[in-house]
Length: 85
Picture (tube, rainbow, N blue to C red):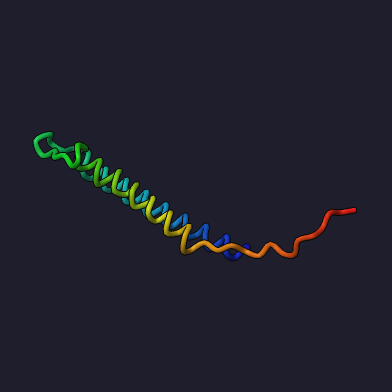
């Protein structure tokens, strides 16, 4: 059970770190020091917000759902004991 919890925690930390690195690198590269003439919009959002914030957020939601549904397992907690006398 502890081994499963550590494995699941490691996966969560890696996914979090990848999402954080992508967001920081993408937004820092495409949002700053940019002329306003090059700004385009996607679904009403500036392009760097859409691709640097909304898309990773949506991907994180999908990965979280897949992780919870297909990767995580229930562990045996042991035998159930009756009430103590």
